[in-house]
Length: 130
Image (tube, one colour):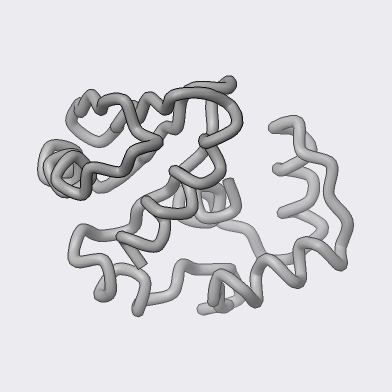
């Protein structure tokens, strides 16, 4: 969610970021936001948070944002036109946790077997795309 917000909204401080996250239903603290920004490599550019340049170069598919939706679904957001190529790569990996994928233009639905394996699938897809 942090990557999505920072990629789509001009945010200049952690207070603004916390307000946006709380509006989306996330309970956060300044300390957790600070740690997450550091872990994700998010930097300030011109007074506003921006996505790290190396994230795009590592994946080769641009910025990819993953979120869970319910107990059996992961939703991936990517640059326009890349969802199909990303889905092909996920399917080729044959992760046992993943039942199937559906690609749109910039959104991918990744169905997983159950709630118990959802986190494992999320971690594997995240690792795959840097």
